[in-house]
Figure: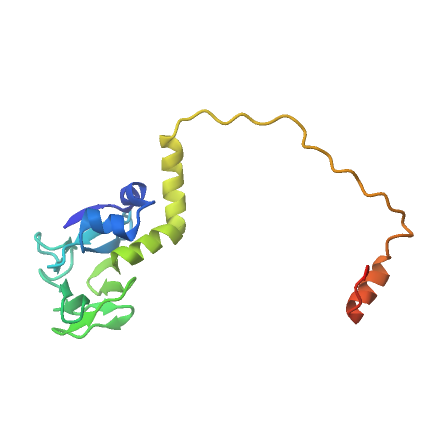
Length: 192
């Protein structure tokens, strides 16, 4: 389990592929943590999983939760990640069943009645998609990349582009706007 600021994760992995994330993190899952007044964090979860609660050994520790509020782990029978709620836990606005596994989907949002925190679940594939499409990614990564690259700006071309010769036609050769509009309404094309 590791936890780091989401901005740092974005800077390090904004061009990653699902394969490169798997090479670096194995078959882990990710939780995007959003707490009021704090920058977003990303938590990686081992396949064996772990608890979410107030216990210092938990995968994610939040004040106001029971020591082991819920557990997240990979379930080989379901071939998916599951949540087992031990206390009242909301998943996408609905209460999760207590003591029964609930299959998690990408971007499922976990909420707790006694803690002001939102957790979003991601697999490697869906996290890459999120990194590529998030507006936050562009806002957070672009300035960091621009600051990291201190190359001289490319010279600006000052020569004027070649001019295309203008076709010589007289107003009598071109149809009027009224004629063009009327012809297009009747399905007639000019020049045929």
